[in-house]
Length: 351
Image 1: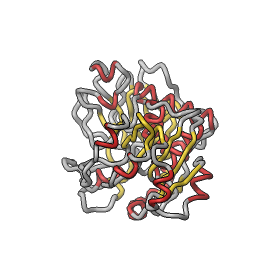
Image 2: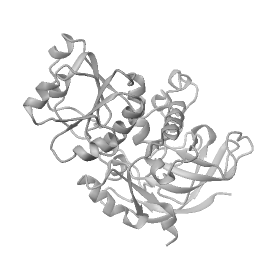
Image 3: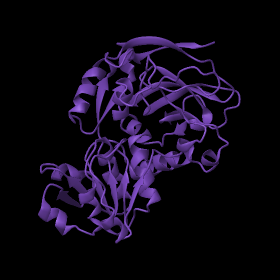
């Protein structure tokens, strides 16, 4: 039988999230049901709720940085058992047979991956609802193991912010002997600093203004460059093997490209949309520099990231909130008033 669960939903693009009860499906043979313990608040939650990207259907129950505990399993489930601590990220299904899925790149599923919320179940066409809720049901292959010893609330943002920054760092081989820079010190940027440092890279933060030096160094930065300073930017010209650009809005990439070493790459992970500043390709072509992009990661890579974080004791810096405060948290996020990720304690649904 379907299970009645409680959560918070947006019923239109211009409305606050409010309490809402709905049904989770009965377990299919390969399903895992879990109680949601913690759910991170991602900037994309706001984009979906406010229909910034268009095409949304309401109600929307956001949340794709989910840590929970297994309460039931279908008869075909072999990887998890009742009581296990597990996670769910941005995806809950994919076709599993296209070339991307066979290459363990389920996020690029050619038949359309199924998002944790604001999507359609590929089997029955029902809407998917996310982790701002008391329970969730997910097919076993899209459930992830949370390593022992990690703070569970701090681990929740790893399911999106963590893999979003880990994947390009691994793909472009960040590590000892490599100079890595991070643009933007927010939910993504602070994770990029921590992960790049743990991989052994020499790490720099690009910041638009002073005042972040102490925090940046605590998070893993070896150097801080003020991007508004022509002198400081000139001093690092041709310096970096890899730049992870986490800025979530339209901005000029040209000053950062000038700081890339020959055959260096700047990778966009924060902004979706057209750039208003013309990209000057000459400094790229004449130095073999590249512009890249990346979207979360596949399931195997996400598990690899979680295991890496378990080995190195890495979690997100968070502010834990009650679900009743989520609308206020959205407003604060838009003002960058959080260090560095809000996480909802779902036990607050009971209050």
